[in-house]
Length: 347
Image (tube, rainbow, N blue to C red; front, side):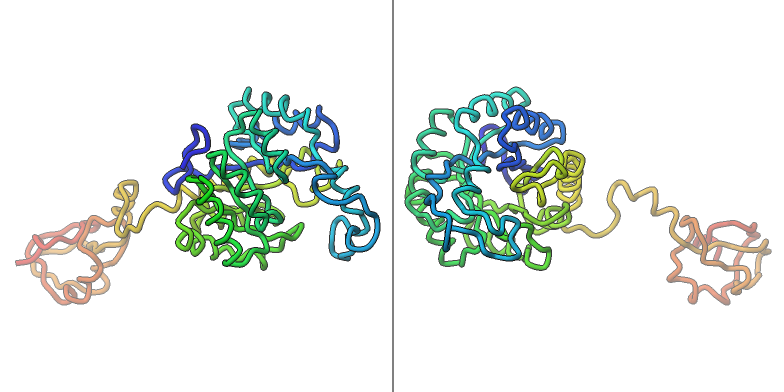
């Protein structure tokens, strides 16, 4: 499949997405700086989120509308207030996308309702991303799939049945290019809860490209995901965690993101194919393996012993597997110390 001109497949280096989310801290200048830094770090795309607080939830400040989980980064905040703090003003989308295009980056977004899809269509985004929490919003998936553009769906918390419903809905509504993301919807996510082996199973089960939307700290999980067949990696990105922000705690800084780009591509390069025996690059190294050498000057008729027949480097002599066979044999000619053993030294 392709996102604009970018091919997405196991035959290509992983496609790396820098998720801005709310790390702009309500500053357009900072948002543009994030795009600049993402480009410099080697990202292939920048992703936004398109919603308003009112399109996400109700403006209620008690009960289930307040985050009560003691382990949450946002404990005690009302949902409406949190989304108001984190949202990207819609009038910023065009300048952010223009800055991304100037760097040669793809730029797209996660819409959270139909109005956001209609708005993003006016900006001619190259693809869409459905967030994990919206994976069960089949009407939204149907709306996005109807654009005919590539669709990326995160699957955090989703059962196989729920993923199947999302995939069937997308394909029935016109989606022909699909990426599913393995995702763990905790912030940050632990390595132990990442279950990256699911990636290969998901690819086989749903017959599409599979990536990782990664909320773990560091880059280890993302690198490992490539080994399991992930072709797209998404990580939250910030200029400086110390400056704070709704997602800063589990976001990568520019130098870390550059490491992510480098190491995931290195992991992809290392996959290669099933191969035994020396590679072309190893051919010269074969001559540094152990082989059989004469370790003392010998005259014709001398017997080979453990003192005058050695298994040493380099590898120009007969293989060591013949050592026991040749002990006790007589050489038929004069041989100098340091001569690689060959069959021509015997009758």
